[in-house]
Image (cartoon, rainbow, N blue to C red; front, side, top):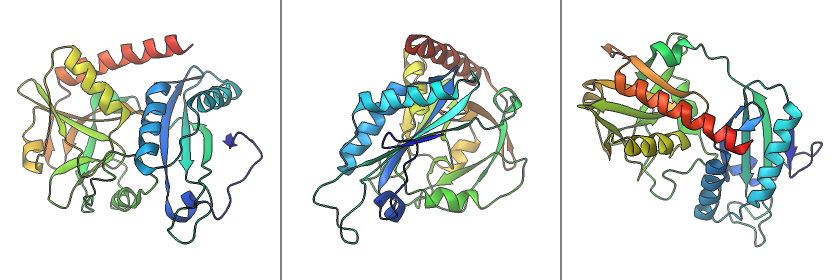
Amino acid sequence: MILINGESKAHIEISDRGFQYGDGLFETIEVRDDQPVFLERHLARLNSGCRRLHIPCPDAELLRLEAKELCRRWHTHRRAVLKIIVTRGSGGRGYRQPDAIHPTRVLSLHPYPDYPETYSERGVVARFCATRLGLNPALAGIKHLNRLEQVMARAEWSEPDIQEGLMLDVNDYVIEGTMTNLFYVKNNSLYTAELVQSGVAGIMRGIITALSVDHGLPVIEHRFSKDELLSADEAFVCNSIIGVWPIKQIETAHFSVGPVTQRIQSWLDKFARNDCMEAG
C-alpha cells in the first residue's frame, strides 16, 4: 500500500534524485492499532533533516493526514510498518541541485516483521562488523537515504542465530547497530555513543534518553571502544520497530538481561501506549 505525492497510482520518475543519488531522507514508524506510534517525533526529525539537507519539507499536516489515511486503509488492527521517504525530486545536471526544488514524498505501509518475542524477553546475539562508518559531521545523526555502509555490514553474516551487527567508525569507536542504536549499562549509569561524526540519531534513542533522565538514571554520551562495551553490566539495542532488544551475547562475551534494561522496557511500553491513546 503506497502513496506517491498523495496519489495511489502514481510512479517515481527515473530522474528522481532519491533514486539517482540517495538524495533524501526517510522515517520508519511502527503502526499499532491503526495508529502511527510517535508520529509527531518522526515528523519533527524529518523536518530537521530536510532543513539540514536544504530540502523543502512537505507540510507536516499533509504528511500527518496521508499517514493516518494509509493506516485507516490497512485497518487490520495488527502491527505494521509505515515508511515515509522525502527526496529532493527530479532535476539538476549531475550532482548540481535544480534551481527550483519540488520534493517527492512517498508513504508506504508494510507488514510488521515477524520477530520472536524472545528477542525482547531473553535477548539477542550480536557481532562486530568489519565494515566501518565513515566520518562526516555534516551528515551525522541524519536518517538519509545513503545506507551502503549498513548494507555492506549486514552482508557480512547470514547465521540466523545472530540478530544484529555492531558497527565501529574508522577510529575504532563503537557507534551503533546496522539497524539500531546501542546502549550499555555500567555501575547504574546508561551509556551510548555520541553521534557528532557518524551514526543515526534514532527516535527510540531519544525517547530512551529522555525517559531515563526523567527517572533519575544518568545518561552519558561518549566515545567508547569494544573493550568498554564488552565490560558492561548490561547492553541493549533499540529502534522504532523493535523497541528494546537486550543483548545476551556479543561474540564470546555474555550478558544477563538486567534490571536496568527491564525497567527501560517497562517505561517505554507505558510511554508508547500513552502516545497511541493520545493520537487516537
